[in-house]
Each structure stands twice: as C-alpha cells, then as structure tokens.
Image 1 (tube, rainbow, N blue to C red):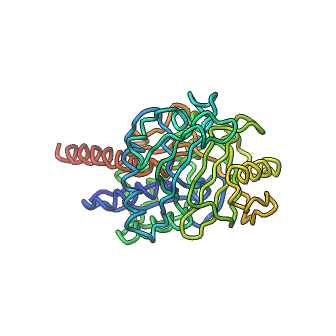
Image 2 (image 1 turned 90 degrees about the vertical axis):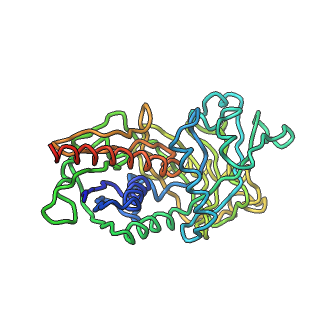
Image 3 (image 1 turned 120 degrees about the vertical axis):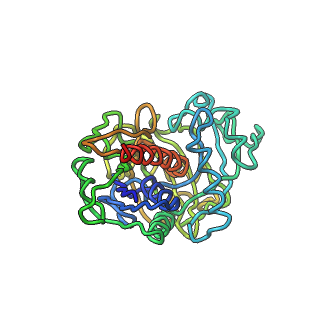
Length: 361
C-alpha cells in the first residue's frame, strides 16, 4: 500500500487525486489544502476560471491533447459534472497572430489544434468584426466550476480519498498530514499553484500571478463563446472573452492577463471596459441595449499561476520524501488537467517501482 498526500485542492490537485484513486493498487490518498471548493480567494484560482477549452500551446502537447477527450466525454455522458458544449469563435488582430497577450499559440493562423477540436473552420472575411484580420470557430466546452470542482471532490470521496484543511509553510509539512495516523506518506504531490512561489522547499521564483479580472452576469450569450486576441481601448494585457457556464452558472465576461500583478481587488475602470467590449462583441447579451442592461452577479479577480518556462511536472526528493510537482499552468489549468494528471500518475508509478525495488535490497 502506498500512502500519498496531495497538497492543493484546485482543479490540478483534485484531478491528480482522482486519477490516482481510480488506478487503485492500494493507494491511500489524503488531499490537504488551505482552500477547498466553495472558498473564494484570489490566490485560489480554480473557482474564478471560466472555464473553457482554448488550446494555448504552439504545437501539440499531451497536456491539452489528452485532456480534451476526457472533458468531451464528460460533457456527453455526465451532466452532473457541469460541462456543456459551446461553439468557440476566435477573432485575431493582425499584430497578435504571431503571439497574442493571452498565450503563444491560441491566436496563430493554421493552429495545430484544428485537427483536435471538432468542427474547426476558418471564418470568411465577411464575418469578421472591424479591426480583425482573421477568425475561426470550433466546438469546445464551457465548465461551471461551481459544479465541476465539487463533482471532483465527490468522485474522490467515493474512492476513499480523505480531505483535510491545513496551511503549510514547507512542502515537507505534508509528511505529517496523512489521514493514517502515524504513517508518513511515501509520495507527496505538490499542486499548490501560485503558492509554489512562497512554499518552503519549493520557492519557485519563476512562478508569478497573471491577474484575471472578470464580470459575471445573468445575461445569456449562448450558443457562442467569443474571444479576441487583444483590444484597442485598453492596455496590452487586456482581452475580450465571453463564455456561458453550464447549468445556470452565469456568463463570464473578461478580461485581463496581467503578469506579476497581485492585486485581488476588481478595478472599476477595467470592469467598465470589459462590459463595453462584451456588449459590442455580442449585442445579443443585452438585446442591443448596452451595458446598462447587464445584470451583474459579481465582479471578481483570480490570480492565475503563471510560470516562466511553462508548467513544472517532475519528481524530486525533498527531506527524504519523494515529491511530484504539478504547478505553473497559467490560464490553462482545466484544459490541461487530465493530461497533467496522467503524467503525475506515470511519475508516481516510477517512484513506487523504485521504492519496491529498494525494499527488496
């Protein structure tokens, strides 16, 4: 039997815990976190995500490539997970086609994901808004995070995973937090996201926030999710995106991608720009009546866990215990969650094999 402690209860930590629990093999799993689903704190990013699938890599990677089939199947067959299909419409400005502010690969022409996402088509020039040089559409999904995160918790609990609240100062603190009294974990999964830049034993200085500000409204935007590569009425780190969460979760209007910005308080000026862009891009939101007809649920800020150089998924020994890191996903945590969890599973299996061999020597 292997004892595993997962540190972090965002989408990455929960997906890893579920994947490890599904594999069986005698894993005993405890999830330990400062924040749990139902909490709202800017540093606990997952509840603030849209969330949808807009591939961001410059070329195929397994994180996004292996996650899409899982989310697609959930949308088709598991309505209680809170995921539904929507058509994603991307508009690109000419100056952003090489690399827009949101990502390196989302807004390039002829992207690799045209062969991954269903119904991908390039839009004719006649369908492009003013100021946009190209566009495309494809079938994607939008996730109601307020349903999906608790669903992940429920799936974990059904497989024996135990949840505990704790605030860790050092990753090695997890060595005493298994729910099995007196048993030190064989493996620790570090899924602490943004807090990996402050967590002792990790202290990754490549990790920083990418501040995302959104407005959540009751107005409906279906059937399309609209995203633009940039805006001309704000800063270079502002964008326009609109997505309607499944099962009455409201419509997300965004947004920003402000690297290095820790401010968790919504900026009213940015909020006004977000709403104006949204009603211009999608007049159906208000029936052409302008932002005054938006029925606002809340203004919110989430701090995405951006990491220079990309996500960190690797194993290392810290204070004598194996640690598998899985953090630094930036704005693609949901759409890469299962692919990353599969890699975490592989690393855990490698460690278990090493521990088994070592015990026989």
